[in-house]
Image 1 (tube, rainbow, N blue to C red):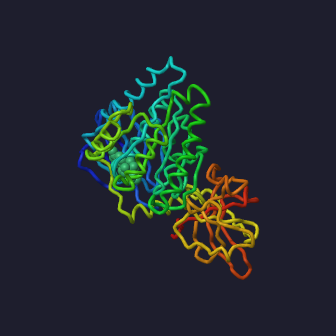
Image 2 (image 1 turned 90 degrees about the vertical axis):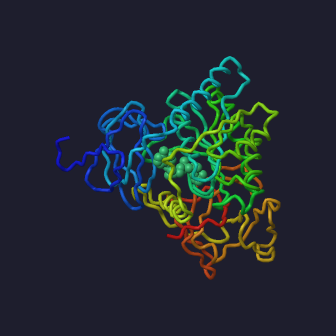
Image 3 (image 1 turned 60 degrees about the vertical axis):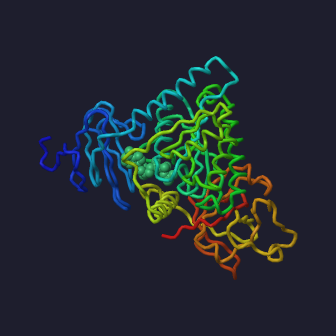
Length: 431
Ligand SMILES: Nc1ncnc2c1ncn2[C@@H]1O[C@H](COP(=O)(O)OP(=O)(O)OP(=O)(O)O)[C@@H](O)[C@H]1O
């Protein structure tokens, strides 16, 4: 590289952040592990060779712009990468061959059932503790599947991060092509349930009920054609694997009729699940965590959650213009998804009553404590259909005026709401 503004790095120990482009040279089967801070635009360009980002191939000489990201660019055959505004180092040892072998196992399974019109492709649950690389391997398996011509469903059951849409949700999306490196899954059209909390323990019964509804939606998609049936799904779970978290994991495997479980980096979980499912046909695979996986503190996770909400309303590059809507109390019906103050029945309009009580979805009146909440807009036409209905979008409550009885909220687009039924939980956006 003759350009004097470019720093050339071939040493594996380098870990620098600079606005100047830095060239990293990777040998085959190495990866560049990088971090881009909040509020910083980092760029990545493949200048020579081939490379992939969690299974999605990088185009040669295209500049990818990423914000607030931690990740790795892997190369099977060697490459040169140009990076700006990233802190990065080269990882020499990776478990990528083991991960690729798992993809081969899934692919072989798809081949083995080609002639059986009643058989389903791999239904894969990824389990393991927090920060063990579950989301990363989920993306890899989805991207490799898409590159091989399959259309798997991605199911995200981690309301803490909101891998597909917003935190507080669980959702499923059809993956027809490798996940876009810059925009992620924001261009897919998912089926979304708004649970309303970042943690499973706030209303586990509702979480399980929403999971069942999501599972039946996924089943319908898998049954819709042969390609979907063969493709199966990849399901990402949250990292809570003890006590109630373990019970919910077992319910997940059963509810989604999984035939593969991948356990990341946890011998005990592997042993417990192997024992529990010893008399079934479920294949359990254990995998090591990559040395590159970043630990994310609860503060960092919270910041990521808030960032994700901001992106929903303002766009990844601040390229969207959200609108304010003013709603009359009488024109909407708000249901609380547990975990908050429940209005006494006397506070509700005459004739109204809690509707889906065992799951703690209770009708509630607007109150000041809802300020800063994220509301899910349900497509349901009747309250009893809320659990079966997709979420149309989200509102961010900026003001509740108890005197004028009006709610002011930020909406991603103008126009009337598609339904009057709104869901509220404990998720708030506080910058
Ligand atoms: N090989 C790698 N090199 C660098 N960063 C990585 C690598 N693998 C994963 N990461 C990053 O580490 C972080 C944690 O990984 P990931 O999200 O896959 O873990 P997880 O188990 O799904 O986390 P959790 O369930 O706790 O949210 C992510 O930011 C991810 O992009």
